[in-house]
Amino acid sequence: MISVIVPVYNVERYIRQCVESILEQTYADLEIILVDDGSTDGSGSICDEYKLKDNRVVVIHKCNGGLSEARNAGLDIARGEYIGFVDSDDYIEPDCMRYYIKTVKGTQQTWLRPDLLNLTPRVKSGKILQKILRFFPEKKCLGYL
Image 1 (cartoon, rainbow, N blue to C red):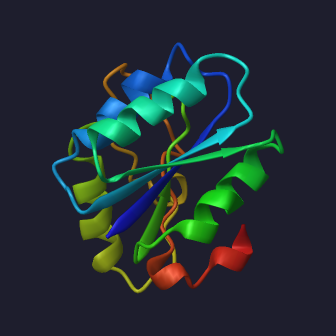
Image 2: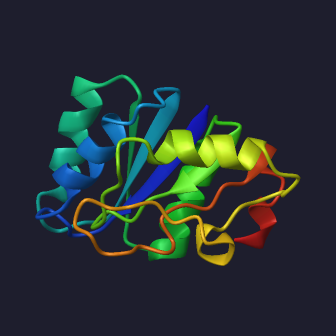
């Protein structure tokens, strides 16, 4: 399983597209952790809507503490063998997770950074996102964060 952590802060305008792109992955063994970091717009409510729609979605609501704290809150409850991060104002291609899991399982890396390995997939908007995901097999490198 891949635990996908999405820190959320005042992204009401983008969060639906982000979450939909994760839910539509061809690799379905996912846990999607939406961490509402004290949003003051409707982002937190939108996260709750997705939790009701899909049992793979987990929502954490917390006081604003910043990006690192939000990611760490997600890491604290993540159950996946692999950890991925997606920014809440980005969205990913349907085969993104399948591509990454295949790549990471085929390497001896303890973690994979697509921007360093030139493994960035296409993104619907056409823009290149060089830091879509970081994988940490068996959570070995969590101290890195």
